[in-house]
Picture 1: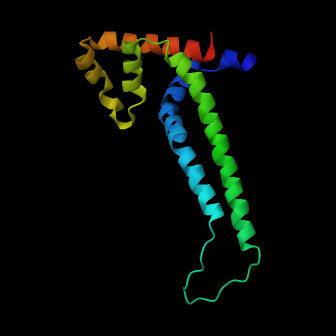
Picture 2: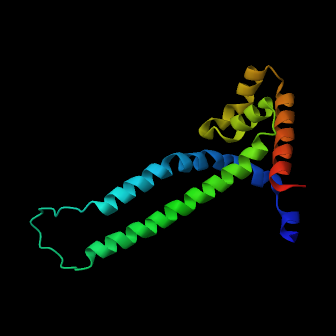
Length: 150
């Protein structure tokens, strides 16, 4: 428990915010990917006519199934972790006000557009630069407190 005392909670909260879109993509895409993998495992492949001599590996079918099962395990574990992350993150995210969520989203979730986040927020919210930074710092403190405790 001592390790929590030394963790930079604000940086960890920013990393959690930046992971949100990836976790959402995993949750949205993994069920289809798993279904596709199952379909490929069940349906046999036909041999290709390439004109090249064939390699005689009597276990090629087994190797393909084993690789697919390993990939399936990885996908299911990644999906489970994404679901766990969402339950953890969204409960903390929901405690922020709409203005705080908008501010955090602009600064940390928009990818390449972060460089103009302050100007966009000043225009969108009709706040001064100082007020935008104050909201950002307050929101990060609240979010890190909700995610990691004091």
